[in-house]
Image (cartoon, rainbow, N blue to C red; front, side, top):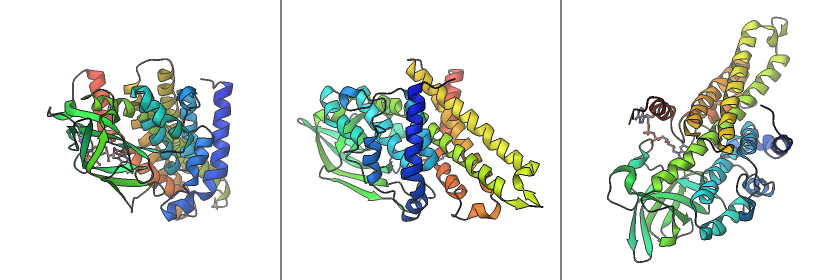
Length: 381
Ligand SMILES: Cc1cc2nc3c(=O)[nH]c(=O)nc-3n(C[C@H](O)[C@H](O)[C@H](O)COP(=O)(O)OP(=O)(O)OC[C@H]3O[C@@H](n4cnc5c(N)ncnc54)[C@H](O)[C@@H]3O)c2cc1C
């Protein structure tokens, strides 16, 4: 595959931005447990929060391969920054573009694309993660409004977001059939947010628990048809998994860069450790993981851009790239020896950040169930 001139240019723009605005601060943000909030407006100014959103709604257009390239570059710099884009654009803005009414698109998309507003995605609850169709947050119709009660767990951008794409039960049908989706402004009375601290990785990211206690929204806040909320969520996640995979390619590439640089400089037994074949083996393993994860991820973008089915390929890319990112970061740490274990070098943070990738937007086990079901035609759930 060859990138077009536009794709090459957007990748260069993202790489320069990441080198200048992200990489110098990433260790500091990790220790402070918060990236600098000013990064959101900077991402918006470059059009990174509106990629693939039509220009008429404030987006910067672009194809999905361009989106993947930007996501990879941001992930190479700092997964906490990459996650801001993957969620606000990838899960929220793109879903509004796909499922929203004209009013909803005009109300939210220009602000989300410019970085004036941020979105978060509220599916997981304290009691329901992989089994998201069993969620218990309720939305009860009262006249021309819905009243929402319940809670959401592990919500990325949760304390920063201006709007939450929230999934709640509107009917008594069991499982996913009774679920609807809503766009809920986070300043609505009754909605409270608590930041979750002490994460292993992604420490710079604002991850939160949301509690809804009598949150009243107009009926027009529903997005997509009543009872089709689970389809809205699954369509968002199918593309979201490509975005996570791209972020993982970035982590694996950063691991390769760090391992190569260290192996060329560090000397043991009278020569740079890059001369030892077992160190070369570690580097070869990282390199293969980078290439394979990248090609699987680009394939998803290419399928989407050509209007082809992509959900199973997206699960495949997410499964492989997330496991590959963990392996690559761990191998890079090994190349660094004891120095990999201290935060003066990037390998430890890469490993901590990579570890969540096999968990969120569907664990590795759930991706295997989805792929196995698609290939056999037999439901595994
Ligand atoms: C940092 C972070 C950010 C997140 N951001 C968001 C967000 O923005 N929005 C959001 O909605 N959610 C978010 N999540 C939640 C995330 O998607 C869930 O944690 C994930 O889906 C797993 O759910 P769980 O933690 O409840 O684990 P569980 O579902 O309880 O799973 C526990 C274990 O059981 C396994 N398991 C479960 N069911 C099966 C099965 N049928 N077969 C085989 N194995 C199974 C799982 O693979 C896992 O190993 C985030 C999580 C984290 C940690």
